[in-house]
Image (cartoon, rainbow, N blue to C red; front, top):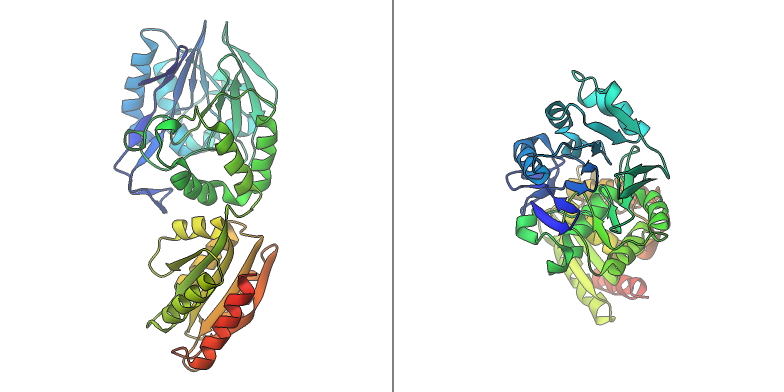
Length: 392
């Protein structure tokens, strides 16, 4: 339990034993499931937590209540890492009213088929207000940030935005600090979180940002990661850049997927040439780097080179998997250079070009460079030409 303000307590929990968030994203520093207790004349529990941690959460809640009975359970997002303890808390407090969007309420039966909450729910929509007898909560729709039922709410008196998954971050709070100003680099894991969890939904995030800018937000309380109380303009600016699919920094990300080292050698040589042209360069090994981090980097830079080997008459699987993830996350607005390798039948470049053709505003930079096993002097000249073009 942590005091955020006089009327607001943090009652969430850290999960330091989970290795993969959503069974796919490595979380070496764990994950926080955030929940809050907002008190006035009435009390509102702001979201529950994953069932993995419900016993600790219920203990935190009971301590925070200090013998009081909660009036409302506000559910901003129905995904199980936040809704997993709903049934337990509703059973524990029989007078508790569950507040959520109509879409969220329609999902209750999917996650809790044995429970009947029909007489204990309150559907809220855009602009609806709940009066806590001295404090009000106003609700705003945030569909597809990143599920269709999502809402956020605003505590008008405290200036607190309960932002659901928006402004979230990977990492247990015990390890990364409960409050944003204690962070050495909030953006690092927040960036990886955004592009992999919300990145596909830039337009809905832009819509939500438009609503937020009209509010006097002084605190952002997300469902994952630290409570943000300082540098809010910085966080809002980053979300604006990210959700417009704009590059956060100029430079070239050189991504290679090499089988026996020849493609990696060519990519490294190309990176040196690009750097000599005055560009910032980062080189990554697609076969060895975790894909969620690759996605983060691909969205961060404004130019990318994809260098891959041909394999079994197709594209080397690590690169194919990476591009598939880029497609899933609606990657766009980038200049892309292509380098292919094939000892007898190079085809990786054609396949990469075809895969990228379905993405928005991807400018393929010519020339595409083809090497056979190892780069020759003529290949180095072609790589130099590509370096000059992508550096423009």
